[in-house]
Amino acid sequence: MDEGRFTKLGRFEAELLCFAISKTIEKKEEYISRFIKELSTYSEKPKKKGEGINSGCVWELNGLKTLNFYNPEEVARVVKERLHTKYQKHSSKNEKESFLRQIYDFFNLNPTF
Image (cartoon, rainbow, N blue to C red):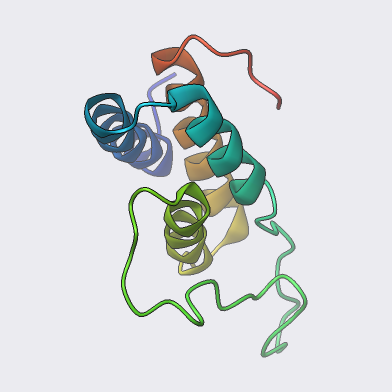
């Protein structure tokens, strides 16, 4: 089966992040661990038809004025906000899983999903 649109997008975005981390961050394992911990709080709870906002709809970027790339929690919040902008939660779930899989592969880590 071919790689889907959002799976491929998640993989490519993770490749960009992995490259940036590998070139700029000294404590890579700690950074990735903190990033994944924050990303794991992303809610895949879909909205019900006609529902405006539910508990899964979080404004991830509230309080951020600029992005500090050296803060993995802030970077994860940006990724989560992008995932929130997807129309369907199953698409964002596929993208998130592909994103994480690429990070695990790049840094030779054991997946937690």
